[in-house]
Length: 378
Length: 231
Image (cartoon, rainbow over all chains, first blue to last red; front, side, top):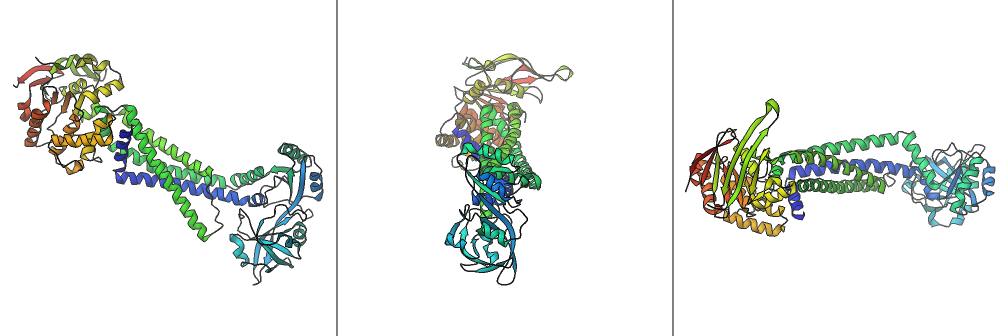
């Protein structure tokens, strides 16, 4: 089979025009599929940034919460009730909310403020500079040093802003694993200071963060929280809930599906049509090979090899192109919300396999149908 | 009398059914021996290409039997028949059917590659056969760079590179000018035929009749007898 495959390889790559068209078709399709799904996964990932960065095992929230950034305040008794539940190792409050800060130049900038439990500072970010205990200092805030920090005019240790007529002093620069979706800088402070500085409704706890004693305790905690009229979700469940909101409630999922399908159809059209033309142009020669003594399964093997080879090269180029363009985009926009994951690599690969299968099927059908006798008849 | 290479007995073949039924072969019997160059001639539609296809294991007859060196080829399974064609029969097609994207040596090496011979060894053998057909130094050229006569020689080299016992040539001069066609058939007769090979040629071209051992004339699906025997 090795020699036959080499024959198939030469027949394919020596037809440079068609081979190029096939590669371009698959590359373009894979690039589009990868790019669209990467953007979408990037958006989903950034949308769950607070969940990822805080890292709590269980999040207790109002059942109306759809995404982590749209919290609904809960009364203090929820925290006490959760703390008293069997299987809870500890539970702490978390505040998240939006605010406007006035910068030294007089301009205003929207920020996200995260208020950490005063005692434990659970969910605190890793510091790039400064000391964590300084968060207790008067007006102490940490600023996340991510792509959005430029919007705060690159504050340094000791820099000051104004937040609701309160002074904000930068006591540390922090780093987080995932930036937020909405392009706003993030400030961390204590829970108490956050609810003091920011205007709030009657209930101030955005989330209760829970650490269970063991994984077996999670179902019971969830059940007991539910009996209080609230919702307890694991980190993964909360991320999924956030993702589901963007997929099903915003039209984002439908748009991604449509765009992915369009790129699939474009790829299939270009590759399928080009490969089919390639087969048609070589049909008589495949017939001659059949007459000489090539078996049907060997011809099928040749075609499958040709299509697969083209598809995998195109897949590699498509993924590479997508990666390079995302890298270039990040040079300009560091928080660019696109992310290649195993899932979109697998989705694109599956699409390529389908394109390969359909293109092969059309070609194989024609080649199996050709009778060597037709070669004699001209 | 020489050893029988091909024996066709009671060969009938028709296409279509009912009113559309067309008889292409009617109870044809023939034998061809090793050392013979047998021509099958006749007007268009007389059934000569159908007969050639039936004899070479390409088209299954509706009735009758074909024995090649004593083997009933139509009793073989599809894969066995393909193997049989690959090892025993060489084909020279009317339009050559060379692969334009393979160079001359690669085209010639195809039967060896299909026999799973090593690629480099196959190419080396193909180059040797190109020299045999008078195309030394042409191995790296692509078919489109060759003249019609040279392409026909490449097709012949491809047909004989596997050293088949039977060579089937379908209208070998149809795409060539008179002199070239004559020279090609003379070359085949003088250098390829030999005592251990049988060549069956379908042709319209009377200018190459000189090289035939026997000429079988077909009319309306029947063998109308031996038109002429050469020495």
